[in-house]
Length: 112
Image 1 (tube, rainbow, N blue to C red):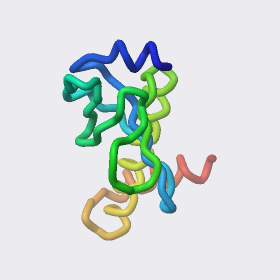
Image 2: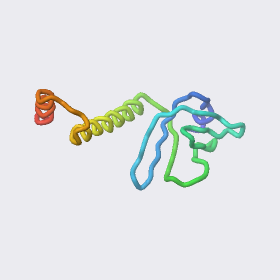
Image 3: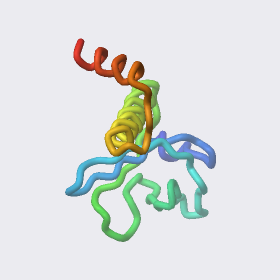
């Protein structure tokens, strides 16, 4: 892990995991800068050269390598969140669908 951290440079993708009492939020972000002392800045958060978050307290925050599995997991989570927003907006009447479109959706959901 330390070798990976040492090799990180501006523009490299990393996974930021933030955990608190509300749960864990993951996102893929790019390294914004490396300081002369080796600190790593990603998503506005500063990490020490050993990968530990520097200062403050907003739960546990770490950075990890981005693999294809990580990308797929994060993208699926984002898609799920977006799908839930669409469903809520549909229920609230913010999205209007025709009766045939609604029937198609209901059939899909019923068959699961």
